[in-house]
Image 1 (cartoon, rainbow, N blue to C red):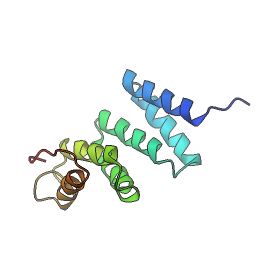
Image 2: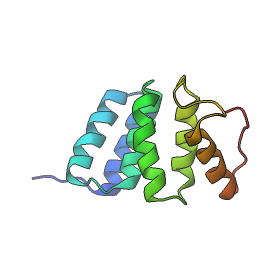
Image 3: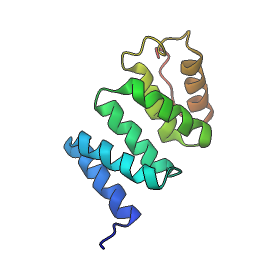
Length: 117
């Protein structure tokens, strides 16, 4: 039986994501996460795929969990900010607690944040 190493898997998913093979990327991430549910980098790739596929509302809970699991991970906060900006009236806007939390976390990590989130 042939197996794939984790670095090769991540490289494959990133290539699929960049080439626009979003369905493959999403399905492969879900299959991987079924066996390795604690793999935060693959969970982040899954969320990025959802955002690129126009499913930002599905990415928000994934990213929120990632940000809680590793509050120092700038990529997770940046992806959450991206997801919040994509037509999510329930989350977007300065009145959203999640939006404010995201902005505060990015600022605390030294990332310049746009004010119109």
